[in-house]
Amino acid sequence: MADDLDDLARRLAEPVGGLSDEELIAAVRQAEQIRAASRERTGRLLAELHTRGLSWPRIARETGIRQTTAYDWAQPYLNVHGDET
Image 1 (cartoon, one colour):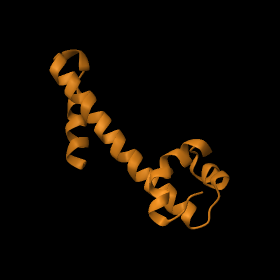
Image 2 (cartoon, rainbow, N blue to C red):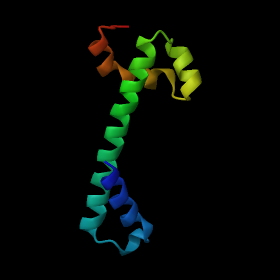
Image 3 (cartoon, rainbow, N blue to C red):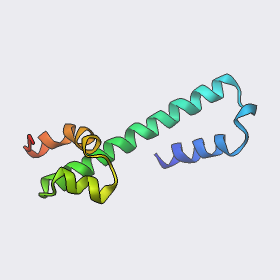
Image 4 (cartoon, helix red, strand yellow):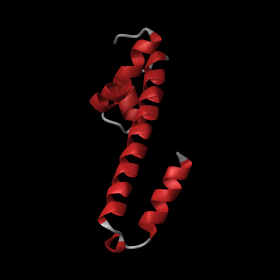
């Protein structure tokens, strides 16, 4: 993941107008992979906070992530803990 971030940062350090179509497409794919991995990590963290007893309104207030977004991102990981709510 760190290598992906470094590679993407190198690609974007120069004006993107100089990149070929293939390089731009590769950069978009890398950015999306990084975003998906980040969302998964965030979802796992949010699920853990909720499992520890924090309410969705409090999680939203404390993290700055909208309550519905926090719930949606955490949902796949809540069942791992046996928590359906």
